[in-house]
Image (cartoon, rainbow, N blue to C red; front, side):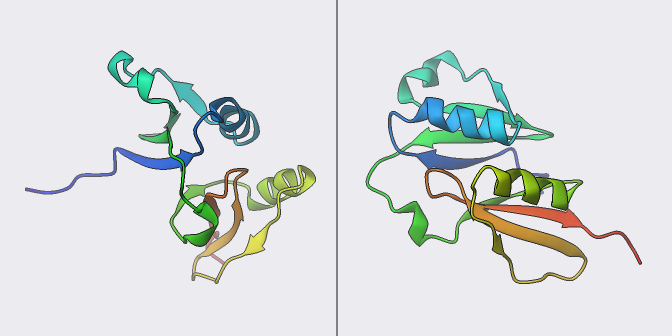
Length: 124
């Protein structure tokens, strides 16, 4: 008996802000929205497809997202391009504590969720 992978991760946004979240996650980050099962559509939110896993964006009020270190880390192939794109859009970039073999930075999405961008360094 073995856990074989991660199927999905979930983040939350305030209720009623799905379109703003789609604009950010699909428009800015370029993730693809996927069809959410019909029996779950009435619960709000939406689902995103990302490689071999999904990101579920749910809705939830009464939670201070700025007070948590919980986050998703998106692995990229061009750290500088992402840093420039987000900075040019006015997203505040924060440096992360270094991890050997990786470059990374973090930011908060428009709803306060912490997001990490990480890239594996080429062997020198």
